[in-house]
Image (tube, rainbow, N blue to C red):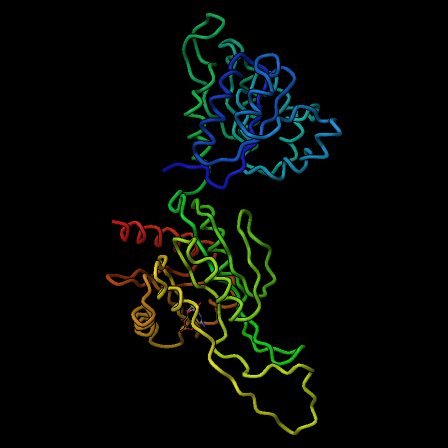
Amino acid sequence: MAHLFNRNVVLGVSGGIAAYKSAELIRQLKELGADVRVIMTRGAQEFITPLTLQALSGHPVHTDLLDAEAELGMGHIELARWADLLLIAPATADLIARLAGGRADDLLTTVTLATAAHKLIAPAMNQQMWRDPATAANIATLQDRGMSLVGPASGEQACGDVGPGRMEQPVNIALAAAGLFASGALAGRRVMITAGPTREALDPVRYLSNHSSGKMGYALARAAVDAGAQVTLVSGPVQLPTPDHVTRVDVVSAADMLEACMARVDDCDLFIACAAVADYRPVRVAAQKIKKDAAGITLELERNADILATVSAHAQAPFTVGFAAETQEVERYARDKLERKHLDMIVANDVSDTAIGFNSDHNAVTVLWQSGSQALAQASKASIARELISLIAQRMEAADG
Ligand code: C5P
């Protein structure tokens, strides 16, 4: 189902009679899950009041480029960065011409230039203005630059003419907006993902850890957001930026990670354990830096709890997915782990192959579940993550019945 969960939409409204339909469009966008902020041109305010669109969007409407007070709230550059989609509906012939000319003479044109977001425009004008070669050339220019177009529809116009130029129906514009984004396979699902290594302290300056980069877990978090999920990433220490729209909880040790996961497990529908959790921790953590007086020292280690097995044994366990890094008989050991840890799915990868796994940007995996398996050929971690998320979503749906 098309949706706009987790999507920030800046709706630009320019001055045409169709501006009154923007009220309904905001409702449709919000119904699909979007957070909507509105920019109105001066002309638009002649047709509908900012107060109406403020009430519907739930945010103050942005109208001026040079408004010191508005800039103190969410300034134009912040607004441009906030947007996942810039939707302009209605887009008048004049606005389209100004966009084609690359102008930045009001807030809406400035934000259009300043944003890296997807751009979708819904033209609305008299049929003769739409047919004019100047408009046609401007539209072609905008499409060449990567802007998408929805409508216009044909039919009777406010001015009495009949022909193409009516703004597309709000419901169709909202669906076109949703269609610009990836699948909604996890729409409305709450997902918790562990990622990265853990560090087990020996003394105030030393620790035991591993080479996990966190890349796979972070790629999964991104793919889950794209599939419409609400994502919490419980992350060990890694050098990666937090993906957009992800709630990140930073942890250091396996014990911290367990605590962070169990504090949130009742609020999640899907748990993916991607972290390379240290199996053992030092029995004693020295209060002071260990001195190198002795010729050798012996570390006494004790087992860490298995976070994944603890989550899957929880009373109302979410759908649980684990990873199995193996160097031999990958599928046999992975299936054994699936049974032993009572998992819904396990993702097995062969870490004896140095081209894939841990620090690499690529991976190749076999996914196993009770009644089947599927191999995913070598690809970027981003692409493997998308395939995994879609496979997990399918299995979750099958489990839901
Ligand atoms: O048993 P093994 O460590 O091979 O299992 C790997 C899977 O279990 C991974 O999904 C990993 O994130 C998870 N795991 C865990 N807590 C541990 C050890 C592993 O969640 N202490």
